[in-house]
Length: 246
Image (cartoon, rainbow, N blue to C red; front, top):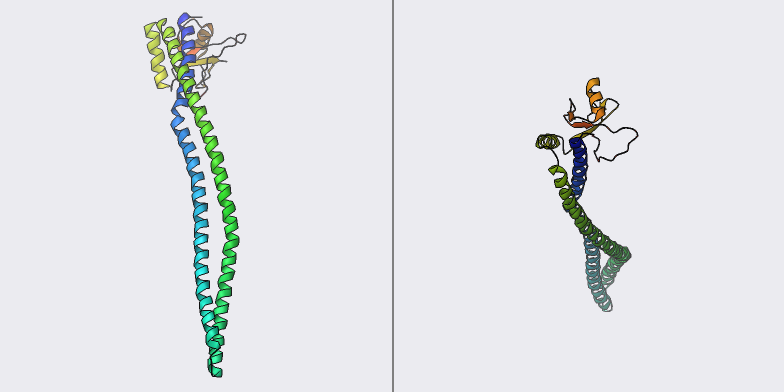
């Protein structure tokens, strides 16, 4: 195989690994943002549940005040009933007593409903708090994992760049310039395997004479369609060039 072509294949493998690692590093802010969003949602669930419980308790206190008011009126009317002198006065007092009793019963029914609702709300608060605690632990673990992954990928990128410098040093200047130009235009993928007469990246069929030349791996040849540098891997040889398919 042409020495420069062999180096270009190795260079592409290094660049592809570097791009993958850098892509993962670049995704970290969004991943951390997603974790924070999950935590904020869990906190909001707790805050909402607590607010609903607080509103329930405030409503019950207000009902208790209203009951106290009506009970006071009821006591007053009963005392007045002891001193009535006419049937008209008596019926009027009885009417007021009945009204106060009805109001008390209505308010007590509402209070009972709120008490039952309060039990459900208390359970909701506990559930939301438990889910928040679980989410906090998960987020902490994921953030530690991301930090460890960051250190690992950063070290890998530094290592790959060092290896790249060694490969680049052995390349002819014009060949390296061709590689860099194509790589820039083709999203970091400058190399393409030729297989069965087709460029495996752009999937365009090559002219027979071009494919026959590429099969020998003795020259730097470019795809007429995508301009990527072509190489061929014999079926009896397995190689990992880390060249992604389009």
